[in-house]
Amino acid sequence: MSIQTSEFRRGLKIEMEGIPYQIVEMQHIQQKRRAVIKTKLRNVLNGSIAEYTFLSGERVDSPDLEEKNMEYLYQDGDHYIFMDNESFEQLPIDEKVIEDVIPYMPENTQVTVQFYNGSPISVQLPQFIELEVTDTEPGFKGDTVTTSYKPAKVATGGQVMVPLFISNGDVIKISTEEFTYIERVKK
Image (cartoon, rainbow, N blue to C red; front, side):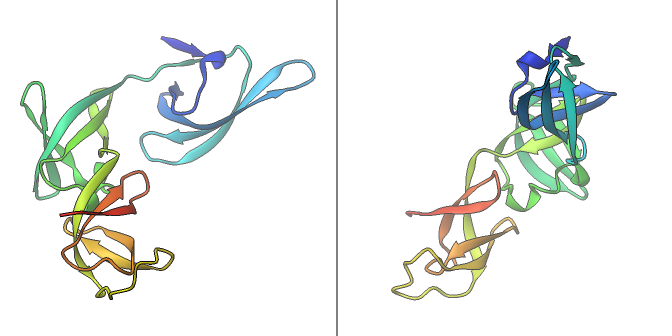
């Protein structure tokens, strides 16, 4: 199936020269003779960014991408074991494929696994996760201003910058888009 440039939008996935890309940015520019679409594309396989200009009306291929809802179960050496929520089949995914989300992925988390040509290429965590702070400098009474931040290690091993009033044992809500602190969760 092919996609015409008039269908382009941010987040759309396309395939060029056998490589799947996601449109990160796009700009429609009217030139003297013909309109062009300038894009920034992120390689879905390795995350690199490329700029590409398409002529208006040009067609590109649609990649063979599939997404499945799965549950992260446990780590087994260099592999992370996920269970398909429909077939209950277990799938090992190599650490190299998902190394960016590992420090923020607690066991039994519902995730979306993306496949390209039948092979897993990425794991997407839910939009927000709640994790316990295991190591940070002590908080002090009165440190309620959120303009100053300090590093905090969470239960899964990741590190997040948190306000000064956060202390060990607090549960915090984290945005998984850029792994940033959102708020302290009331117990």
